Length: 85
Ligand code: V3L
Image 1 (cartoon, rainbow, N blue to C red):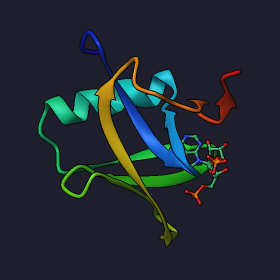
Image 2 (cartoon, rainbow, N blue to C red):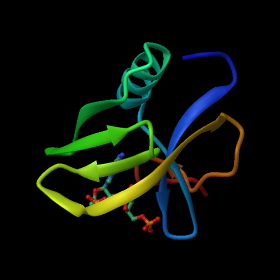
Image 3 (cartoon, rainbow, N blue to C red):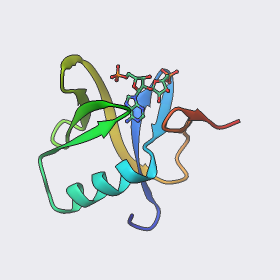
């Protein structure tokens, strides 16, 4: 991953950092200028749409979250659902 940057998805009142595996896939796809990719997350397929910067569950498009690429020290709730204390 590029020095200093990380990938985040939106939670309630804050952002979660993607886990390491997803982050590497996101960064590779972003650098390759892909419009979208699919990611398997906890058994569900999600489409990552880089044009709209959203994550959408493939079998239920009502489940969507904003995503962002931001500094790795940006405020966050934790990583992939594991809370920081
Ligand atoms: N990485 C890990 N888990 C995810 C991801 C992801 N990229 N996307 C969705 N989930 P949905 P608060 C999130 C989980 O979008 O309190 C957080 O990681 C998602 O987990 O409807 O709202 C927390 O664990 C959710 O449990 O398909 O900030 C949890 O929400 C489930 O997949 C609560 O966070 C369905 O998400």
